[in-house]
Image 1 (cartoon, one colour):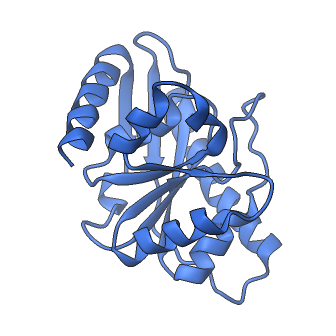
Image 2 (cartoon, helix red, strand yellow):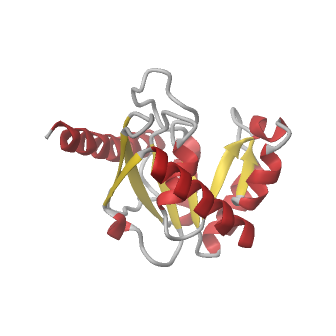
Length: 194
């Protein structure tokens, strides 16, 4: 865990000096128990920033392709990241995710599956719904708004925890997940416009 907290403080310090970071709703993160954090994904900065604003350690599900780069696997090991093969069910990643949740820990997921090119929200992938319904644990939505850049304000609005009914149809659950995030993005944009 030493490596995790060392990288956490390095990233947090650097990002908080470079960007203006505004976090709303941190009280919505329970102090203990399993959680799935879900957020929109517009930039490569999103995963480390979501980790840096949390006060509890988190795990990151990352696309398997990133594990082929020379330095990234070393960093990923220290920030509790693990690979997922996209495009088909990855049983190993699913088992590992369920184990993390059974241990009362946090997973960060970006339901869209990859960064959006336009900034518009995309449909949620089915994996987040499967994990939430299978585990029965709470999801906490985060809406990220603003633009990354020197001294630009990035706003993270953290919503209320919610649980997906295991009987809810997959498509309905996918729409609900993205609607929760959409509302928080809108809230962040309205704050910026004031």
